[in-house]
Image (cartoon, helix red, strand yellow):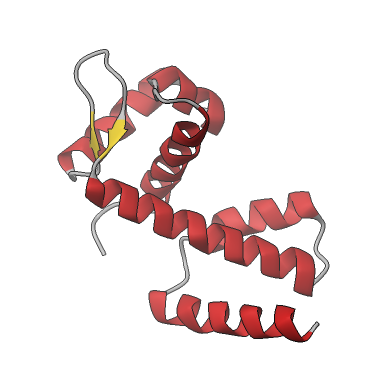
Length: 127
């Protein structure tokens, strides 16, 4: 796993989500989505750019690189699966499940996530 931590993954996931709505992703869009300041976004984007996760020309749109897109999609898949499990299997309220999934998506290993995905698929099929 690269040096991108939880906050970096949150930024990547936010960029991916914004891309699905708009063609262009601007710093202000990311700031609004995450509830952070634009200077915080600029700092994070600089770190993600150095890690090869995003590209951005000065004052330009933010674009995920192939590596950044793969990481963002993986985080998004983990988030969706965890949230679905919490809501459908454990009957957790949607808002609580969303918040918990945001925390849990960063801490779980790929091996555990794969097994959990198998379990959730079987559980939902059986119920």
